[in-house]
Length: 442
Ligand code: DOR
Image 1 (cartoon, rainbow, N blue to C red):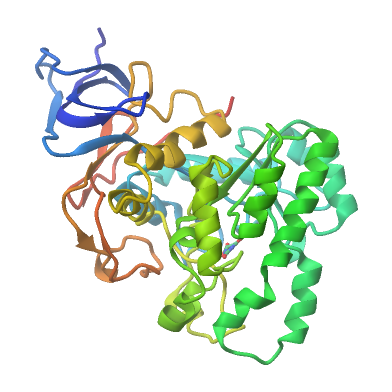
Image 2 (image 1 turned 60 degrees about the vertical axis):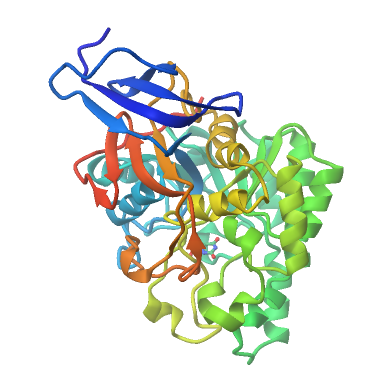
């Protein structure tokens, strides 16, 4: 069939596109899945053919994390494309979409090209990059290629990437058809509340300064503009029950939304336990917000999951609020966090896989990803749903070297991760010579 060596995965519990499971074999030729069947009679015979005995393991489409901050170029003391993609491989993340707040900012074709070049050299998994909107770069936003979409920081940013004036936003929504994604927080309200709460150093105040209303105001504005121009809109890391209820009442067919694992399983109680490590934007919310977001995800009001992996060093996080940067890492824990929720009965494994792979591929129109079926790319993860292991700081691969979930006992850890038909992670070992490819966006 092909001169490529084959990879056979044997006796796996395979998640099929229907959402059902089947115990069986998968044959991969080159970077493509060519057969899925209860028994595939071919055996490894070409030089380089490989077989994985997946007895007892569950085979899922590789995770596509659609919102990460990998810090290269310019902030490599926190993370770089190599370390981040190692963390991805360990976490079962076979593709990522990365944000433009690097140095320089990803606001021009030249800077996008630079990231793509770096990723081709360094990334163990597949990659795509957002173009950052400024008040001035509309021509770049319209023309740049290949990009997964436009990122607008309506709040929680400073410098050129902050697009917080309605006329600037309107100009972007009015022109072109490319997907617009928004970090929806109302910067004016945040500025006012920062003054009001000045002097408070308890990081828990962060969730009050950047409160639910700040998020709701911005989401309402983005929705209004999206409806006015029928412009494809994606709401990044939705964090409040109010936004979820708003979308439940009124969600145009061209609008999608995501939530992070941390906005589902952490809340403001985390400040007492991990202090500024819990500080992120938009901030962690209440237990009630957790519940409303979960229900919205289960009901399809929220479409998928992203980590917002945003590493900062422990030194930076130790500076004391409000001098501490916002953000937490996530790519190497997101799949086990969500699969643990599934095993505890909160949702199903098939739902987790839909939210972390299939629905992402669909929303960003990434061809041949997000399903285990002939003709799809062989981006896969084999997880162990029968054993629990804690998140340990010393095992983390992210350069920042910490996780908000340290000590959490999780199941669903990846045992093998496969990118483009090549094993990139196997039982604790990384194959650092594997390289991902640039994702394409239909
Ligand atoms: O907490 C956050 N950190 N939220 C963002 O939107 C940006 C990110 C970062 O880059 O550190």
